[in-house]
Amino acid sequence: MQLDGRCAVVTGGGHGIGRALAEELAARGARVVVADLNGERAQKIATRVGGIAVRSDVGSPDSITALVARAEDIFGPVAVFCSNAGFSDTGDGLTESPEEIRRIVDVNLLAHVWAAQEVLPGMLERGEGWLIQTISSAALITGPSFMGYTLSKHGALGFAEWLALNYAHRGIQVTCLCPNAVNTGMLG
Image (cartoon, rainbow, N blue to C red; front, top):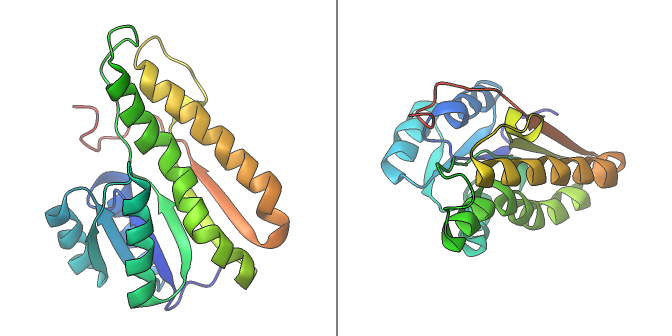
């Protein structure tokens, strides 16, 4: 996909993998919206890549709706959406509260769904789009801990595969990044 002058949104773009995605998309000519829960981090990267920063909590569908609206108001239709924001739990599953489990599922799984619901209709109308989802090797290899993280990442991979099966023939590219441990600060 040609990216020159096209709108790309990166969630969790203020650091780590998201920062690298924002930098690479900008280097390829995209107009980048750097979204992060930490607005200062987002602004720092947005300034570096010549984009805009938006403070966004992807654990809220309303926040994703507002993010996409802001991106499209400034840079036009979203051509690329990098659903990258995520976090890891520390519990064993038996000790995590329902609220803790719900939060990790909202951010690590449902945010992918909500983002696709926002941008996919326009992409389908235009006959092209690119959904990049940072998932994790935890979607491929189940470990003995981090139940909520593993649960959410398995679900996210299943959703990405579903998207590809249903929309690749209509011009939608779906890319899953499933890295192993990356020194992003998430690991402590």
